[in-house]
Image (cartoon, rainbow, N blue to C red):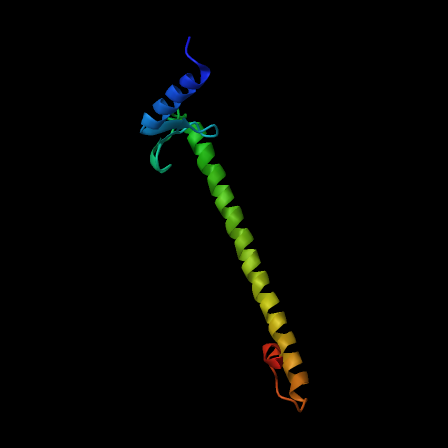
Amino acid sequence: MAPRGALSFRRCEAVAETKSWTVICPCCEAAIVVDAQTGVIISHEEKAKPLASFEEMAKEMERKKNLREQVFSQELGSVKDRERLLEEKFKEAMKRAEKDKDKDTPYRNPLDYD
């Protein structure tokens, strides 16, 4: 019977001799081949998906279309709101500038107080 350390050493040698590892992704079940020495991904192969029926494909396309329209309308709304917010900020800055214009002292950068 070989000592326990000898068995671990043989396993380490076998691992060291391995040039690449094949890892199966638990989420998408894709096969990923990784270089053992550098850890760089050599290749990636997605799991083959079974072909769906025409009705299922049509439903999926409709779902994606609705999602795109929803995202587009949300972004359009945020752009319109952003324009209003920027306009308000600009008006507030103009009011402050007019108020500060009356002061005699010129503007000093806070970093120049040293």
